[in-house]
Image 1 (cartoon, rainbow, N blue to C red):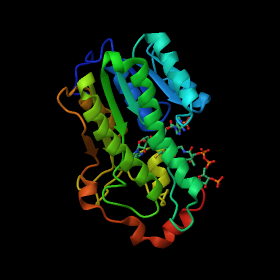
Image 2 (cartoon, protein in one colour):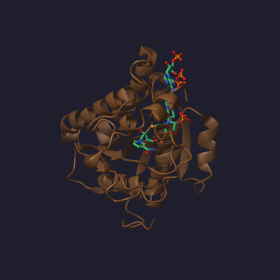
Image 3 (tube, rainbow, N blue to C red):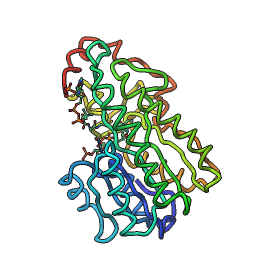
Image 4 (tube, rainbow, N blue to C red):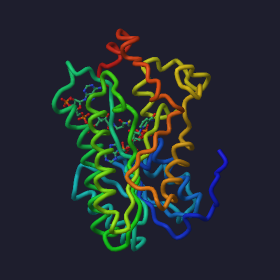
Amino acid sequence: MDSIFRKDVLRGKIALITGGGSGIGLEISKCLVEHGAKAVILGRNLKRLEDALAHFQKGTCSAAQCDVRNTDQVAKAVKQAMDQHGKIDILINCAAGNFLAPFETLSSKGFKTVIEIDTIGTFNVTKEVFTQSMKSGGGIIINISSTLQMPAVNMISHAAAAKAAIDSLTRSLAVELGPKRIRVNGVAPGMIEGTEGLSRLNPAKDVKLDGRVPQIPLQRSGKKSEIAQAVLFLILAEYITGQTLVVDGGLVLSFPNFTLAFPDVFQAWSSKL
Ligand code: NAP
Ligand code: COA
């Protein structure tokens, strides 16, 4: 996908991307580097991070292993980025976990796990980046949300609650941190082709989504590059803060509840992923 932005718009900027080792987070990292930034990608799996680095020219991207639920690991990873670059201008909170599970069988631990990765993880990394860099230097934070909580979908009460809390955090921190020259926005992807997130929520794994998808007003699933471009837009839009931009081809406006339409398929598929 051709970029509508100048290739050097992020020259001199340092970006830290949680979940940058795969899927949408990796695509965002590549997009920011292609536009002049240097990136530091975070994730739990070192092999995945090392494989991701192969997508970048030497010196443009580095990796730090960390579980966003662990505050000590987060502090260490952010310090590593600070030691390397001296500042963090852009934070992308993209790390998340999800699985389909009916409320009836979802355990307290399952619910808590997703809240801890998505919501508390977003808080942990934001807090550390704020303390170590943005408090004095300003910056821009983009939280990757979803459309699952707008309005609501079966079997994802945990992830919907986690993302709704993230949207709330986006607004609260925009208000509180605006005077410190920190903007906070969100991007809410719809069905994004070729991602772990979509494959986990699409029980008909053998049904390819890259053709026509009539239930989406724009008739197709989205591309990772389209999420990355939306993130870049919000990084550059200097008078926008506290907003979560939905990038879903219009799906949420006409959300059919697939899980109600095909209860047997979803029930069978919601066994442990
Ligand atoms: P993905 O490739 O599985 O991305 C999730 C990333 O988060 C992975 O790189 C994973 O790396 C990292 N991660 C998970 N738990 C972590 C933890 N505790 N600490 C640190 N890193 C952790 O899935 P994706 O589909 O691209 O999703 C990316 C984002 O887009 C998520 O926020 C998701 O909710 C959102 N989203 C996706 C879609 C979609 O259609 N795909 C739709 C709406 C929203 P490790 O396993 O190595 O830690
Ligand atoms: N159905 C119901 N409950 C599930 C489940 C499933 N498919 N998968 C996990 N759980 C629950 C269980 O209760 C489990 O605890 P228990 O089995 O010990 O009682 C609890 O979640 C924690 O699972 P665990 O595997 O120990 O957590 P983890 O921290 O290793 O992994 C996940 C977190 C479960 C979110 C894992 O799927 C993950 O790492 N996901 C990252 C990738 C991803 O989800 N990408 C898509 C982003 S949208």
